[in-house]
Image (cartoon, rainbow, N blue to C red):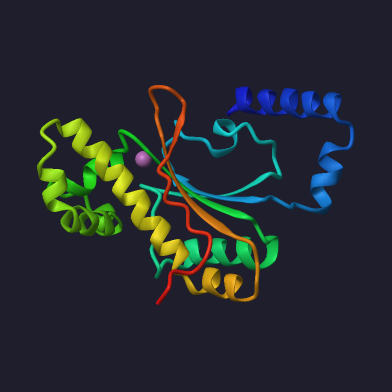
Length: 200
Ligand code: CO
């Protein structure tokens, strides 16, 4: 079973060692990524490939619709490890246009557990109800919700106590919001970067 994948793996490992004989030995002892990627689980949005980074260079957390919910122990564990231990310089929340999770959040259909997971997106949609209602094209409306969701998750990350504490002790850390286009392979920087705590 999965023999193709195992063959791929052997060929890949051979290629990596051919290019750099110590590659795996170095990584075995230490990872020191500069980036934490918080992205969607969608198979078309693989973190390392999109930004052309090698193993060891990006710490990755992915879930349906790239959420950063402040009560989610999985996300919080990743965030704390990335900020406190790895001391990443950048957290990048990466949504993508055409996200199935975003569509499912607001299409009114019942699917089960995922409806609860996607609840924060319905809150974002409600917050921006007038803006979204003014967009006639349903695809464009969905894409705008992808952007608004990323902006909201950037705020979640930037207001998290782990991040606030890192800033308070003088650690350099920025939180960014991007949306990736499946159609072009390019990321759109939403220009919502947060580099310091908001004034109270
Ligand atoms: Co998605």
